[in-house]
Length: 280
Image (tube, rainbow, N blue to C red):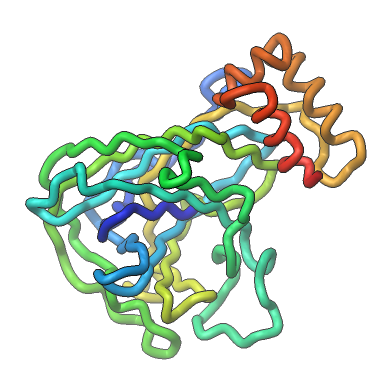
């Protein structure tokens, strides 16, 4: 998953990681709290500089409707939290899916990196009301190292970072007004290695710890919440839609209750989500 906000933000690394289901049908994943070791740039294209994306990954063991997320970032001291005016979320498969495998990469490796391009159907953006968010200022916060502009093609990728930074820690709580319904699989994030790229490096990605800092790994702070659908249909199969509707009705006590519990605005919106999930 990649999250992008409307101004220059350093996405914070975390201290501890865990992933647990809260109860039978609930899904909860968290990588813990920021530990102050790293801030990696997230920036949209515009006057501030090149578009820059920071991504980490996660694994779903069964079909899951993701209804919300939380991230932590560092904005410049003196910047009002109200300046976070837009949030966009994108989901990536893992390379080589959705990628050009014929071209020669300009990075040391693409193994376990995000794919070249995002999953279009899983993009959510506050500008089109497919997500809403609340940004809260927490406190002044310092990171020991940063990756902002030193995002280079091989063989000059190891810059060791750009040193410490202090700013205002911001928590962004996200609600997906159109929830993300994802089959079991490997998506970005995973609590093992964080990746970064800017417009000059795209479609390739660099490992923040191994390639840029050198000799270490970092993980980014985020959490996800939602519901698992254990008996959902299999995407691509003819009976996927019917089996998934039946599984939800069984799990939540009817299709109306399913839409309400999962965060869809209506049964029609849920049906649309199921069709996307099933690839119809």
